[in-house]
Image (cartoon, rainbow, N blue to C red):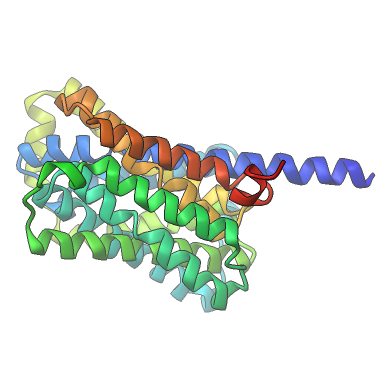
Length: 311
């Protein structure tokens, strides 16, 4: 019986880790969509609206179809948690990340998001009692170093905007707050889908007054087929799937570990940059990618670095 319980826990941990990794990879595609929509004249809040509004509609319809409308039921005393989650993901994370991508290179914007796991690991200790283990510290340092190398900042002499760096750091802080508020909600007994639905719904309400609906309509009418596909892929790849998977991962692994695993995003961004914008990685970038992947693997190696050097 005990062996079965151990196997069940390991399986859950594996699913949680996989979900966090996939969410990071999907978020890595954000820059591709931001550049496309920015070229069409979409402003950050309008871009965020077309990102989450369809996701919210899809989730509500899905709840009705599967007979789980109860997932939208929350206690009045907990409303502040969901508003906090939506503000963190709407203003701090998405708005500032979109702004950073339009002001900086895709890789530099990604590296600034990589500061989030530092905030999460440090804040999760006093807030949720999550231990700052040596393995977490090792993985955090290695992953961050890998992210820096992946961006090409070390050998490219990148010129960047100070304001862009500031909003990029604020985006990283937003990711940290999103992770923390998600943990608060899950600890209150809510399902991950409930957290995501309210995050998307409240986010839509916040952005609606500042959304340029005219450009959405004109883009959709100019090329209905391709526009519908673009909007659908944007929602699916940068909002619906990654947020649901990331929130789901925290049912099985702690907040700090989930955030570190999702920091594979800059690696994914580098791959997308190569595929869509012919941004070929340098030798140093390849080393950076290897370091991030090693850091991800390290979180699943009992004993961390020390165990690798034992005879």
